Amino acid sequence: MNILVLGVVLFVISLFVLELFLYASRIIRYPDRKKIRKRLSVLDSSDSMDSADPARNLLKNRTFSDVPFLNKVLPFIPGILRLDELIRQADLQATAGFFMILGAFLGLTGFLLGSVLTRNPVFSLMIAVALGSLPFLYVLMKKKKRMAKFEKQLPDALGLIARALQAGHAFTSAMKFASEEFDDPLGPEFDETLDEINFGLSVPDALKNLSRRVDCPDLKFFVVSVILQRETGGSLAEIIEGLASLIRERFKFRGKVRTLTAEGRMTAIVLVAIPILMFIGLYMINRPYVQVLLDDPIGNALLAGAAVMMVVGTLIIRRIINVDV
Image (tube, rainbow, N blue to C red; front, side):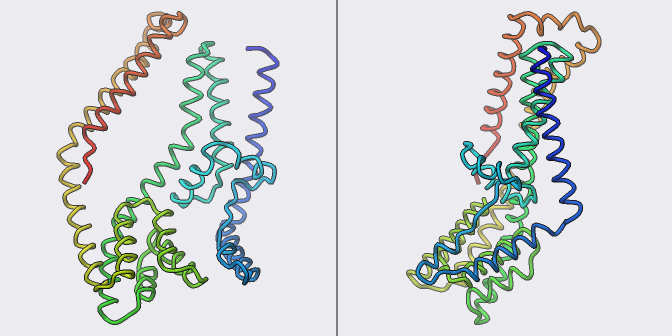
């Protein structure tokens, strides 16, 4: 590798390491920093509310990075808004800029290690992509786990809201009971919706914001049911109670589907793992035997083709075993 390119890469990695160290030190020294900033932003927005345009002041400004320069640059990067939405749904303390810096740092480190170990640009690029995508995969994993927990909490919360409505409480009071009874993620999300209503936002708009913040199809049924009931009338308690029963039945049926498709998921894991493990084993046992795949252009093309076919096969199997309930 050119000594100039190596120097630039090491300099950029050093900057990333310094930024990550400063961010980690702030998290350790001030663990409640996110909650305090959220409370202060709410107080600041309430104090500076303009009577001429109150709806505009209810909008929440998201910070993409704690570094002012990056906070100005990141909004112009494609996909940053989607990443920020995923971080919000995963309820992570880090900002989108942190994950962008971490991904770039891991990608550059992987490319540097691959260039030193294999001296093959294709293999180095594959390592860089694999390591650089780890922070974003972590965000997706945390978001999926949190949304799954929300789905499990939703039927019980709807049952509580229905019983509160039958007892004569208002809809917002029933939601308040649910927000106090359940922990994260359902409790804080319902509590934020109630805060928006208390700040003057209409109930339909606040519920629409809730459905945008939480990626849960069952929640959208609840939001649509409440909005339609407020426009057409009817017993909201019966509607919500029936919806809670329907969601519980969907959970039962989804469990049966997962049991029936377990063999297909295991097949996909085995078919993907076997070629990778075989390549690693042969590389460690008899390196010259597989070195031609890394050095020869035809070998590189074969590796790329194999990777593409593995991805396509995995997507096909995933489409077969994923049954919409």
